[in-house]
Length: 460
Ligand SMILES: NC(=O)c1ccc[n+]([C@@H]2O[C@H](COP(=O)([O-])OP(=O)(O)OC[C@H]3O[C@@H](n4cnc5c(N)ncnc54)[C@H](OP(=O)(O)O)[C@@H]3O)[C@@H](O)[C@H]2O)c1
Image (tube, rainbow, N blue to C red; front, side, top):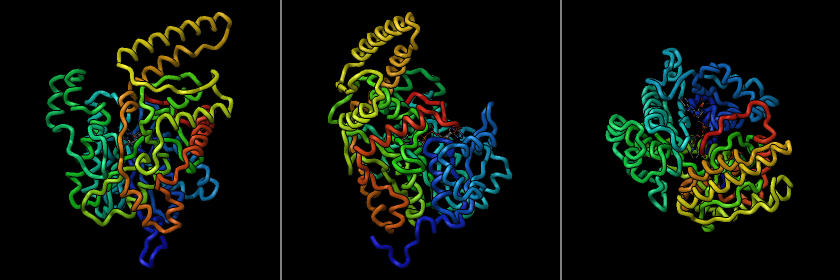
């Protein structure tokens, strides 16, 4: 579409503005921070909420962030713009985000766009902990938004899997899975007792999806007059082109299991061969977030955007896994010959028996290898695989249709230039090419481990 006279480009929207981002040190957040500074050169500043740990203070974490290879193009082309990335010490779990009063004042006076991406993405964190980060953290960010003098838009990064009780997920708000008061009551009475917790989850697969669903409702009900966008990504995977082709820095999500499969270390998965595998490259989620903040800020209603590929460019689990295995064969990296995948839907007891059998075989094989002085890894791999499969089983055997008409419409409204720089239309993904890009990205950025890659892969 040709841009008309009154069209304001995406970089123009960010010109002179100051943005506050949470989760800026995470997989998606890093890409967001880099893209914003790189592709919106007239941006004023970006404040990044960073939590200190006992091992690293805020400045050390900022250094680690900027040392990431994804900042190479900025360093080469406009190194002075790295100074626009300003750390703010804080913690989503703490009252008022644990902000220093002087930092809070700066945020209140200067910021006009808030992007809240920070979360715990571990599927099975204790409910109390997941509530603290994903629910109360969102509450604290919204409280700050209400104090910000010139807020133009608030963007909340949710997940497409917050509503898996439905088969078709539209770009609308759904009722919460539980009443928040009841959730706190359950935590108070039963602590982390699994049985009681699973009752309150009310059909949600884990504490992550549950707390993200509650946070979505919190956002929808409490944004007041602040124009608000909720982005719901499906499974975020390696970048197609940006910030680097194939960029990925975590084994979470689909990456770990695809890698094991490509190596022929995983040949059987619970799943249905007709299930849609809804992957969305990280650059698409990042671009949609930046586009949405720029273009969906005039309505006082919440705009929901499903950042998903399955409804407009579907590929099945079986098809994508085959494409990925073909690349492994082409690159000759598979540990065992003929990587392939069998999908079937076993009972949980059958899955357990199979896994224990495979672990025993792997243990025996390791024992023999050790006798011959060879490196052993099969038992470790099988155990890891079992825990990944257990946590992903629910998502592999079911299939959802995440509608994304609004995302496609938004993409169509962009000028040709904006659409080229901020592509967020999943129908443009060519899966065969992408499998190759993804595979090579895993090899380059995770296996060959450039310095400063995260090593904190969690269970999902
Ligand atoms: N990855 C996916 O496949 C996927 C899919 C759908 C939706 N999402 C959503 O996308 C967003 C980003 O996910 P991601 O994959 O980038 O996750 P991630 O890599 O685990 O990053 C999480 C970010 O949140 C920060 N954070 C966590 N707890 C915090 C706290 N108490 N105080 C301050 N910061 C805290 C982390 O900081 P530290 O560096 O200190 O840990 C990190 O920057 C999340 O909201 C997630 O729910 C992700």
